[in-house]
Image (tube, rainbow, N blue to C red):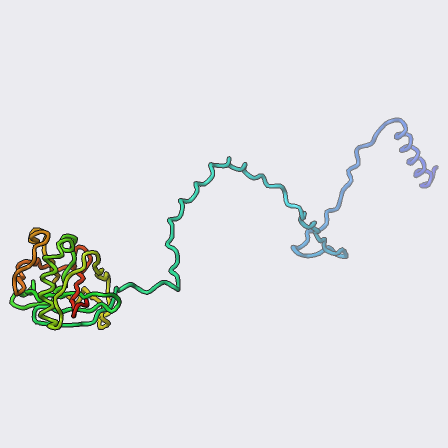
Length: 251
C-alpha cells in the first residue's frame, strides 16, 4: 500500500500530463487588493506628496492678426492765408502833428488876431452869435475857401477894416491868395497855443453866392455879420484863412 508521499507525486504527475495534452484548467483570476481609501490631503505612507510642475509661459506671445489698414484719404486742405499785419510801430515815430502854435496879437469886441509862431501871417476869429444861444456871442475861426481866396479884394478890404480897428498903428491889411493853415484833427493839447477845434462852438465863412465878384471892395465901416454863414462844425475845407496887417509899409 502506497504511502502519502507516493500520492503527492502521483498527483503532480497527473497535473503535468493534463497541461501537456492541451487540457486547460479554468481561468485563474488574479485578485488585486485595493488599497484602503485615503483621506483628503493625506499623503501616501512612506511616499512624499506629488508636486505638479508647470512650465513657465513662453516668452513669445502668439501672433495677433490686425485688421487691414484703411485706404489713405485725400490730403488735408491747406489753411487759408493769414491776413496782412500792420508793421510794428517804430520806436522813433514822429510825434502827432498839431500844426503851428499861435500867440494872441490883438483883440476887440468884434475880432481877435493870432500870430503864427512858425510862419508869417495872422489867424482871424470873429465874434458871432452862439448857435446854441443866439443872445450870446462866441469866437469863431474864419474858414478859408477857394472862392474867398480868389476874390481877395472884397475879403481883403474886410480884413483891412479889422486890422485898423484892432491894431490902430497898422495901415490896413489883406489876405493870402495862395496859402491857408490846416485845422488839426483829433485831440489837441490845451494851453499850448495850438488851434484846438474842441474849444470852438462856431466856425464862419462867406458863401460863394455872397461874394460880389472880382475887384469889388467892401464899402462899409463896420462888419456886417449877415455876410457870414455860421456853422457848428469845423471848416469843410479843413483850412483857416491867413490874414496880414500892414505896418508902416511893412506887413
